[in-house]
Image (cartoon, rainbow over all chains, first blue to last red; front, side):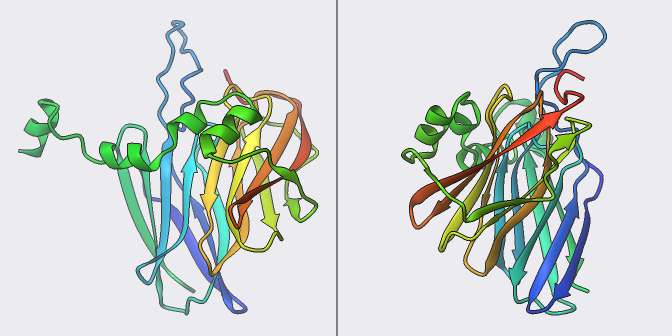
Length: 103
Length: 142
């Protein structure tokens, strides 16, 4: 299982700003190791962010997203104490879900 | 029991879900026309309502290039990042539901200096804006 995400969510005006840093290799499948063997592709494909049971952002990623991906966006609403949950699924079918409380 | 089922190949957790939700055809494309076809859209219209921010003119490290995109196109549904000279053009697609600002920030890899395209789907139509980013150190192949 991958390391936990670092998620921050803050109320900014009438919106909530979400910043997330995920821990993932994001291998492109194009790199070779020291022996000249291709390192297989392994990257996050789907990201879903929910607040109060509602999806506030969903994303599909390719291997061109950087290692340890960063994501930031804002959605309307959200109050201090609410939970924001992020789930990713990678190309091996691994999943990780983390949540944070809006500050 | 789950492990046994996985080993037998009967059950692969998450895989079926990931495959249905991930547009493999679009992520395999190598040029704009094919990407548009895979996404199910026509030729995008150039738009001045799509703005890049936090995106450098010159990126020292191609492995980590910040990209911020805001769409001021009304009824924006999704924002995609495409990198012209990467092995596969499409880097990411963000679906923006109503109530979420049509603004996303992330970081991408760039193999070499290239145009970055911000492709916006709004009210069923596609719009595009480009920004050239020069890379001094490539982000693919280490």
